[in-house]
Length: 592
Image (cartoon, rainbow, N blue to C red; front, side):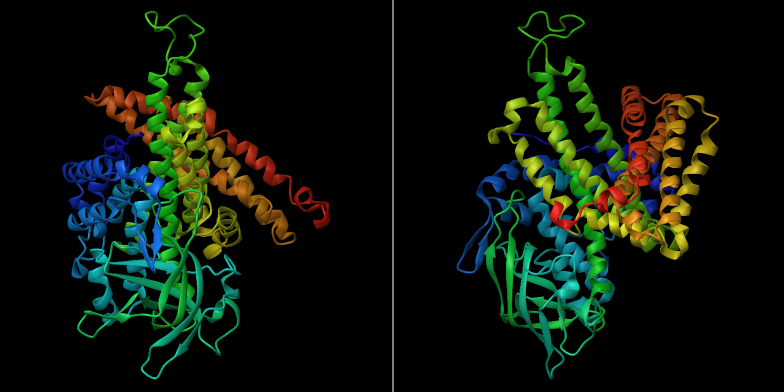
């Protein structure tokens, strides 16, 4: 059975050597000294490896079962959920006034990666609750916050987001679910939603659904969509649970992966709902939850890549196959371990360099969210808005690819379910689809985020890269191994953005045909920047005589691999972008 070890040492390196969280002026960061974060991460890692990881194959094989309208979760899930709830892990970064611990988002993200890597399907139950709570916190009335948030913070009540319908996915303006106003100020919500993660289960007293619906007589399309709080059990004025609401689970979807999470068809038959935010402004409120979820899904791509990589490394060191071409390295055995072979090492370094770069990228993104929300930093808000589709799209595409590489290390055993590698690949696959399929993320990046606020955020990113290179080019080792490759890749990114500016207005297809390549080009540059920052930190630590010399030397070797073997993909993506739209749009529909 696969195992998982939390990357506590590497996370500490990113938080303190690279991001310098404890010396940041962001409110709340002064508490994040190395001793405190280590204690939190060590305990989270222990829960991940000892409680959640053993349940991962259980959830995969048992799945969820719908019986008499109630979903039964896999064996052990409820007990584990109670353990997380009792330990306060479900509300690390929610406000104290509602039962949270008010820790920075960056620390919650680091813990979330561990939980997701050890058991993605399980972690979604409280992850979605966090997102729903964030939407209520941002857009709810004081009465709504008081009613729902304390119970959602400790996951006595969990939460969901209900967007998709059978006939509309990304195009939410086509939705048919309606919300009819009542004399008491409530609404009667009627319609069907599909693909609702954690829509029904047996681990909480109540489930608070956030449901997009249209109020009759409102504007057409997406401008007529509103957001409603629809509880599974209605809540009495004193906070106690009342009668069962008219919302039911019609079926559980049979999925490729994340079997331990109940993905439901939800039927609303005149269910009592309450407006969250303003009428016809539902997407504004829902995007609070969706943007958080997109960062969380990017994290899932990284997390599945990491746990798959960990197991592939262990297998490559243990499995004896063939002999090293340079001479026997295990002369007393019948063969050498797989890891002696160059192509196995290439595969493992592809994985390792992605995982460590992606971790730094994700935590940097979380730091930007803290700077925005806690420090009211508009520049950070603009930058994380730009980065969100890159984090979601690039990390999940690459994360899935890395699980495939890890599976490949096992050879035929990787294809056999009992070895467990298949689950990582299957679980990772959904992350490329939900919370906005990655093609949509690319369109959002090129169609909206690049030009946002006159393009100042992407220009700020270019300036950030340029400044970092200029400030550190006196470090000759850093320059050759990290700064020069980063400079070249950044030029490719700027050239692609310029291509869109010059061609996008007169031929929008020219930009949209290259949007997916641009998302990946941008992602590689972001990881290149992270590796350059990690390289700088590693060189500094070695110069200071760090005790853990091997850690920093390994970090530098891994970074050099990424900069020389992975980052050059930016030139390929630029060439594709500059080929334009003609090749993509040439065939008529009937020619496909």
